[in-house]
Image 1 (spheres, one colour):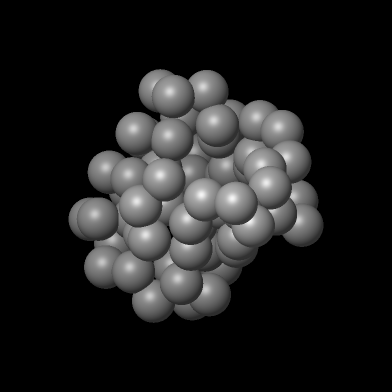
Image 2 (image 1 turned 90 degrees about the horizontal axis):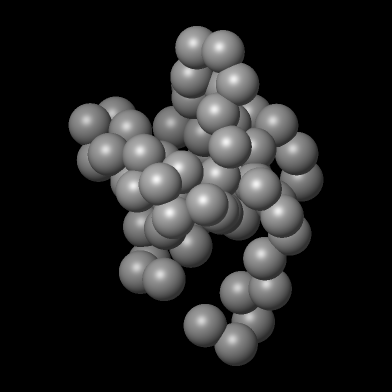
Length: 65
């Protein structure tokens, strides 16, 4: 997992988040944030609900990555 993905996962680690909350927490540019969320969703690590609402598909342990 790269650093941008780790930031997003950490932001989502406590539950469901709207895209604006993720953006506010991570300070990642919106176009990169959306592209990375899509990558994580396609990899099965993130689920999306409705319009730009996300959550982790399962809790991830980032301490070893």
